[in-house]
Image (cartoon, rainbow, N blue to C red):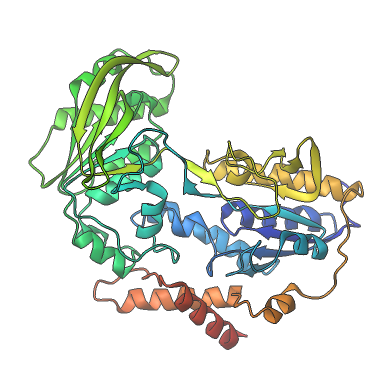
Length: 463
């Protein structure tokens, strides 16, 4: 990204959210302004005591390769050009308007951590869960219950994206195979006691329309003592389907290898169902979930399907909906309740038809929960380009309140955490992993108050 005439800029910017979207935005903004001789002071606010957002609390613990992105995020924050301020919720501990009074601009990067709705009868029955809540549990999120009910043998996962695959894999995988990961002790204990033997994953469209990446799909077939169960009827169209790109060719080869392999008598099974559109979750308030009713669909071209009218009831005792995420609003900022995003034009937040002066958005809260890390970087570049252009054109309002925001938070007795505090918590978790009976890279500290205590004590020690 090329930014012109930024040498005179002296900016103070607040970013709300310390996942990849927020960290990339801070790094790109710093580089853009400093490259032209300007200066920018950035404060990165996070509602959790630790940084990294969904990279820490939304990626399955058995995916260390994906979590490798943490290394680059760490380097950006460790450079010291962006100040991390954790355990601070904007809208509760400090108002958005108070940020506007103290900063030239505010960038919202709060992401999407709630489950999108699935509007079918019975979806709110007992033992019907949102995938986001289950992911938060197995990733040791501090704000969810410590225990998760896993007393059912047969469960359904509705969705054909990477989150659905993560949920299905964790449900089907033997807990002993998760011991080397950074999984929290309470989660490991819960999975060790799991009664699950059969996990059914349902997609509305066909095998070549899945949203899984080939890597995610291939890893599914490598899970120990778990059979992949496929129905021949779901692959009749696949055998003659044209393959327009290499990714689809890889996906087809993976499915073909599984069909050729068949089942091996494993103790657990992962059933992949295609052309199944959910119609109703069966059961009642007393029994809870007893099954899911689906309508069989058929392909009609252009990745579309049509209902056939054929209904099928699949007996299960729990349901996980993994049909997408829904954005996290910020009190005081506009929010589109339908799309689950902050309304914006290329990152400039709008209220009706008018831009909100000095307010920007990036990441999933800007465009919805789609795309990978690469999209997050391009999002941030677009948003930052507009912020810098607005600053150059004099469209931003200069801060009217002096002083360090940390003094305000201390005055309000907000127990904020810092980057030094995170380094202390990180070291503590790694030490827990090194001394654990099953040696791990780390063992996550789950309770929020314990995270805060370790972080704040460590921050004082490091400083």
